[in-house]
Amino acid sequence: MTALPRPPHARGGPQPDGSAATAPAVGVWRMGFFLACCAAFVYGVFRPEPPPNLFEDSDKAMHVLAFGTLAFSIRLAFARVRGAWLWPLLIALAPVMEWLQHVVQPGRHFSLGDIQANLLGVTAALAASALLHRIAGARL
Image (tube, rainbow, N blue to C red; front, side):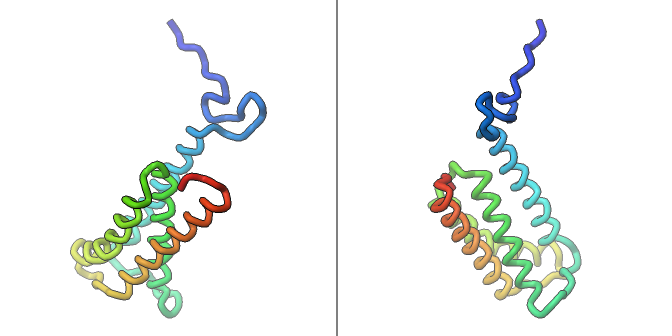
């Protein structure tokens, strides 16, 4: 017995009434964004050589951007996880990743400034998440 093809709206396409994609399609997009952010983050943290110095304190700017993007993508991908669990976990991850970077790649150095930049990125993601929740009414 062959399975019947699923209608477009069951695959995440337009609804019969012409409205936007279904919740599962949004969930797939969120998870894909999170996985892409994880891949870029892991590469950036554990690459053998430090990133190029594009401008003064560009390293700190990259830490803010990396942690902010990763934290925001985690909030999007795992929207059902309570923020009371998620945000403290991300705050704890900030110094751990800086320490782990030095352990895995001895050529990289441990920096309190980088930890502060990581924490600033998490804080920025928390603020962006709260703002999006307030504007869109989305559960983030």
